[in-house]
Each structure stands twice: as structure tokens, then as C-alpha cells.
Length: 187
Image 1: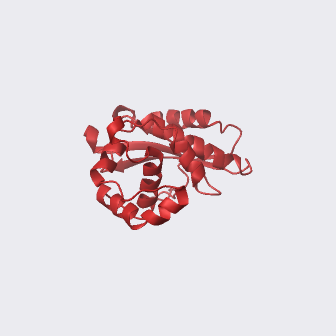
Image 2 (image 1 turned 90 degrees about the vertical axis):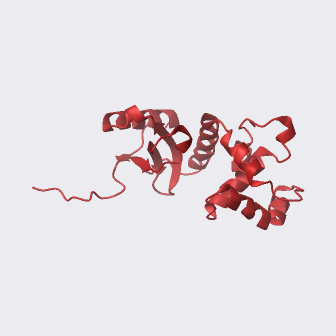
């Protein structure tokens, strides 16, 4: 977990100096833990941090007297640069991936996320191409396609870009093979 925190520390803090009462890398780490524990809103992230504040303080050597307000969490998370966050997660995944044997297969799959998280840009869906290490269920990286790139041709190009960017050449790949098709093939 502290390895992830060190990568989160590389993300630039978009807040003004007056708004930096809580360290961004710790705020991001605690927000990730909250979401993994079922938090689905900024208020629930704040409640998670408040409920586990003493334990989190002890784990990270902090002295937070209270959890940040949900508005502070929202402001910090919404101001992040998407590319920097992706870079930090890719570096962390690359370190985790380097610790294991490189013989495992990689699944590359594209999905359309309806009711997307990206409602700030008025998108009803987002097309995401993901590379997954199948032996340990580790997401190695993702590429979000733009609205005009949503067809299969661009998904294949995004998969090729993802494989090259992550340095995964020489591996066994499966494309769209994690789930069986709903309609069986007819002879």
C-alpha cells in the first residue's frame, strides 16, 4: 500500500496553497481504500476516513485531527489531471507486474461503460480498452477512447497502443476472450 502511496505522491496537487491542509497522496490513498470498501460518494469517502482516521493516522504516521470535509475531497479529486493519475497507476502496475514471471497471458478487452463516470463532459458512455494480467487479475493499464473512436477498428488500434506503451511485447494475448459470447456460433 505504501508503494502505491509513493506513486500517488507524483501527482501534481491542483489546489491553492491555502487548501492543502491534507496531503494529496494520503487523501487519494484513503479515497481509494474507501471506494474499495464500498463508498460511492464524496460523503461516504469522508465517513470512511472519519471512521478509520486513528488507524490510518497510525499506518501513515499522520496526525489528522479530523477527516477532510466532503467538499474538500470533491475539489481535490475533480481537479486532478487524468493523464497524471493514469501515469501513476501504470507505474504502480508495472512494478507489481515486474515482480512476477513474464510468462502469464494478458487479456485485452474493450467495454462500453453506460451511465459513465464522465458526466462532467456530458458523455452518456465511455469506451475503455483494458489490459489485464490474467494470473493475478491485475489491471496493467487502460485507454479511454473518444466518442468518435467507439468502433471496433479503433479498439484494436487502442489495444496495440496499450501493448506497446506498457512494454508487453512477447506475451500471449487474448482479445475479447474473457467472457463467452451470448450467441453460440452456428455451423
